[in-house]
Image (cartoon, rainbow, N blue to C red; front, top):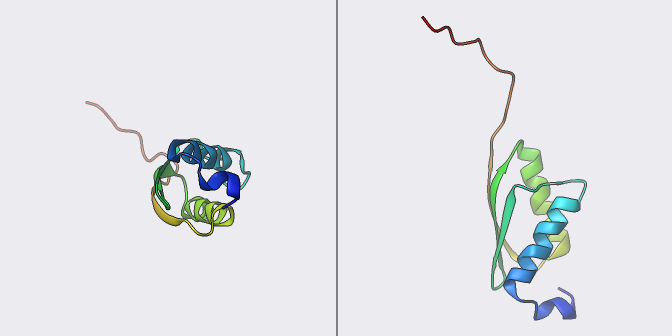
Length: 88
């Protein structure tokens, strides 16, 4: 962590990390919430694939390698719709 960020309030740090996840081309995630408590960074929300979830870890570890990352993001895969429901 850089010196200026050492004394960064948790809510500012969370907002900065959220912005990075939204702007990085590897993640581009707006639906992931970031919460910071001390050196712990918590991710919650949903993504469309396991690969996208892994990229969240990768981006945050590059940014803050000393942080304890808790990735509680769920994968909700969407596929082609099934057969239409027939109402009688």
